[in-house]
Length: 415
Image 1 (cartoon, rainbow, N blue to C red):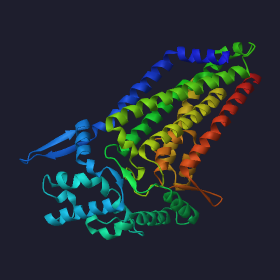
Image 2 (image 1 turned 30 degrees about the horizontal axis):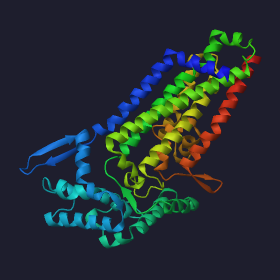
Image 3 (image 1 turned 45 degrees about the horizontal axis):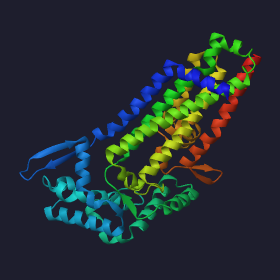
Image 4 (image 1 turned 180 degrees about the vertical axis):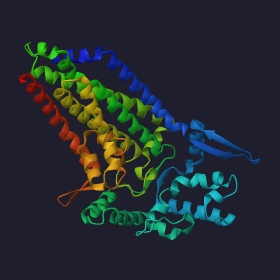
């Protein structure tokens, strides 16, 4: 325990550690505010003059206009919203809302817009995936909207994984666990989760930079040979170094995630976290979570991914005799999931983006996007939903790479 405390003090005394930590915390607040800057609303006054609201003013305006849509999106309310939408368009003789006269959308469609989310997608053609226009949807079919969505899940999986019927059945089973009717509280949108993902990737890079020279820098300077001559300078010192690096990485990720979530939810409104994931992403998303639970799940799963990546970085540091080489190799593994997601075909990409430690917070294929996607891994005919597989992989990789790092450090002594 005393060695661990000393290692923690040594890492925390380093100016680089504090500089990177401060940068991460500052970035947390900045990235939480950025989604607000993308919000804008066009407002037409009684005289016909149009004004544009941005940022917090836009959020407040739309939340006020859509207050009546807040709550449970039961089939009756969804049907009433579709009927009101169709009546408005028929009254003005148009087929799309963007063809309405100035000010009509803000007055008549904007207040019910949250309840219209996903209706077109639910009635998409099962063979082509093409969604109808809202004006073409039969409101009578919305009385059994939940069954329509479940049918859409089945048809979607038939298109995406036609040769894997077990995955199709599993997807329907997962969707049946989603609590219905869905809840909607206007304000928070999926962009805020995207920036949480960007923050998690940034913190991953920071933690990797802190951990990469832990062993290799001492090999390079020759300090390792002196430390090994001390009473606890072998395995116990290696374990203490690894534990200190994991503690600092986990603590930094937790602090940055907390700062981000407190800021973003305060800006958009804490009631928004009760919105069902389906009302922010696809209406047939398989996850039985609301937005607040998704934020928490990503923070927890992201921390596991960061710890697994740091464990791999420590193993590379224990193997490399040069700090720059260790850092370069670790950074390569950080961006590997991004490259795999863009460059490799479907099955290979799915597997690599599942087992690589950094995949959980990758820009292209993170756990966040896996939760809102429909990918299943085929493991000897058994379907495993990719977010479950990614979390399980991180849990296995943390002790695996820690053990390999200790072993590599001991072998270096022999060499």
